[in-house]
Image 1 (cartoon, rainbow, N blue to C red):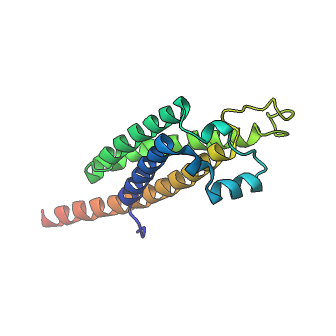
Image 2 (image 1 turned 90 degrees about the vertical axis):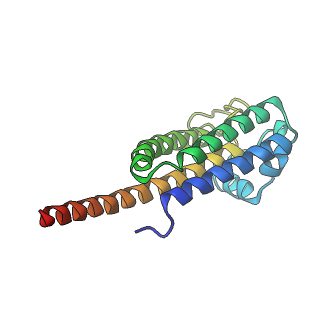
Amino acid sequence: MAIISAQSLLRTLSLFHLTVSYYLLTSPSTIASQNLVYVLGAAMDIPDPPISLSTPSPASTLAALFLALLAISDLTSSGLPEEVGSHYWSSQAPIRLAFFFGITGYSYAGKPGGLWGGKAGTEGKGLCNSVVFTWGFLEMLWWFWVYVTLRDEKRDMMVRVQERRKAEDDRL
């Protein structure tokens, strides 16, 4: 049995998305200036975020709205009954994990001098920066944790179902 349940992980992630959404809407520079963004960016030799992330812009507002929608949707879905929620999240977690693996990989491969980056100035400027890499990397780690926890909980739930069926068969 996991120390933290999948439902708790999902709710925490939803609240994290709401928080990031708020900061993207009001002050994107707060996100861009986080130590973790600098450390991961420097460790992976990924360029700093563009200057457009220093003040609220239409792009940061759109990202904030998408994150808020995702957070509210996930927060609502995390309240599903255990059996229904287990099926729903067991199908969602691997898809999101693969998606964020792709985002993180693209962000890394598109850096200057990277696999797809080419020379400085020709890289994919929109997604190949330390903020996108850090976001994708943290989401990928989080969804892997959710996936592993869900598998553990599903196994425990199947054991309980088998025990219940055995007890019903013994009564008959």
